Image (cartoon, rainbow, N blue to C red; front, side, top):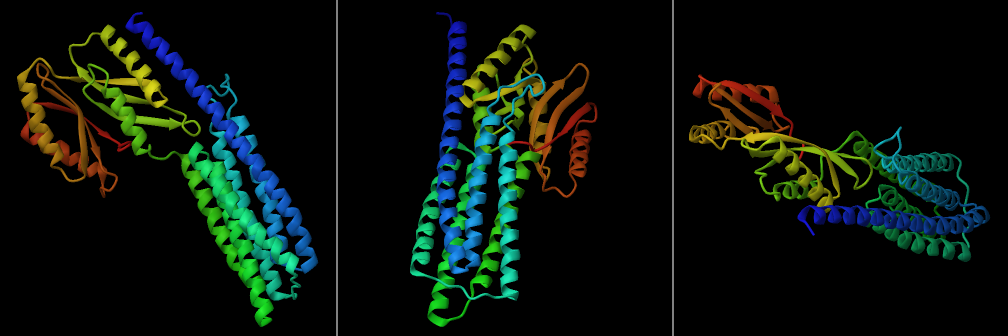
Length: 390
């Protein structure tokens, strides 16, 4: 079998393996969500009954929180199912980003539950009502604390393992609920021992914690929707795969767009010898595409080219001199894509300036001035690049 056919077979296997892994991930998310729904509905029923019998606002609100948790699990299932829809003409890159929307909805549910709890707690502070705790009620609440701790750890752990923000948020919410329930037990103990009702005050404090958690969840999800910096491990892995292809001397300007968790498409620039023909570049680009998808699961939809001087020793000397000038400039992180067109007296390269620089344009101008001063006979074609990936 030829190397070309082996490459095609390997790529086909990679596609099938990743499709199977994605389907397994979706099944795991749905199973975990169903467990969360069943547990929260049962807990809500028990707590609602106990809360009404004991006149405890904290326990009643806790039951409402359990229902909101069940709803968040429903949203997670719907989001996972919709995100798995195949691409179509209207959405050619698929529906994976729906998972971000479902995570945002869950964070808004958490925020709403926190605000509602705070409002009800304030009402009870202004118009207190003595609670009536029974042994059975406290035992049920204690059992609920244990269940929510286990459920929260389980759901959050699965969410991190399968990279599902919706599950992570649901698990975090369950953990917060266990804190609410535990605070109810503390309030009950204080009331039974000291005859001082602090339930409403504890409810208000816990509500503030829930609101803070909801805001943080919402902020993190919105940040992902806006577009965050590529994870360092993913960026390094993709660049390593690109550079492992014979003929590639560097990988730069990697841009990846997430169309759902672990669904990346993007582009990269490669540095190759200036002697390569269009046919060689075409073959090289296809090999890079196959290897990056096979090893990293990333689709490179665009591969740009930087030419590398191979015909002139003078160009090598110029590269050394220019690099020394550029890299000794404060806030400059990298110089790449250097090419010296000696017949036309032109120097081409890109420079990356740190976001920490007070004025990136001023740093760029400083680079131009330093190179122009040392090499006045050359025309400069310098691009100011963005620090996109590690």
